[in-house]
Length: 201
Image (cartoon, rainbow, N blue to C red; front, side, top):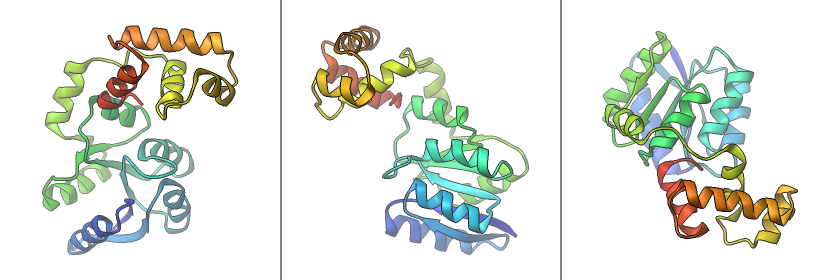
């Protein structure tokens, strides 16, 4: 029996996925979580073979959770589920150790098949997402530029961002300028939107 952990912040979606997966003869949902922190705690208790993680959850997102699971439970395979087929998400998920990356509107049979395949050591990636990721190319932003853009996404002032990230205001301005140039944006709001749309943040 394949033991599966399911982490999804929308209760109805989580319940529907659990019901569908439990209908499979060889799959058992042994734990459910509404966010990344819960998922890590439930995984420590239930020791799943495969963790299905929604990419966008409150607190720790699916990619951060995947990276931590790789450290705490290295034998647990991770399948990332997303509503948003953003190329940067796929790249980041693979770097975090995910074995599969699927969109949520895939048929239930495909999800069950993907669980079996990753347990057999395969990588499973939605073909349309793989093509989009290849055509989009790598993330041009440095990790620090991503940090500064993410910190300014809520409209924070340069001073607020500087305090939050323990940087000087001049350094924050330099990172923002570089990010605006690299995303071909007119201002930091457009730079944030572009980075989010690509899945770089």
